[in-house]
Image 1 (cartoon, rainbow, N blue to C red):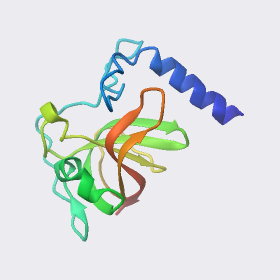
Image 2: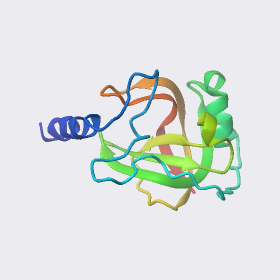
Image 3: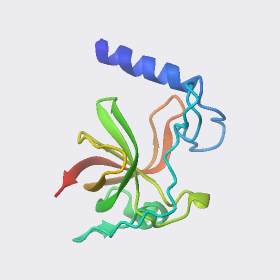
Length: 153
């Protein structure tokens, strides 16, 4: 019951400030919080993170632009944490950027859900499964994300 209340409270609090949710697969993470602080991931122009090494290693741009062909497949991605939201629906929500892609077409940022903890600024490598067109309700919908991610050395 406590977890259900926390989820409901989170979605109720954030959906009131979610902005225009009428666009298909629009994420309310690209808005301003009720406290006047931007809740969208940082866009840092000078991020240059070396691509992960190994089978299925991809850049953020490769994942976002080839989401259809990668759907359901395991990938390895390395990037800098630009946003961290802990313990929502039993997961930590991490936005990664590696310097690939463009903010204009949203190919520069990928959401990773995991039980691992992080801080903004950390450079981390995750192994997870690419999911597409995922709708969590309350306006939280994503064209592409990485789920079941585990932190890699």
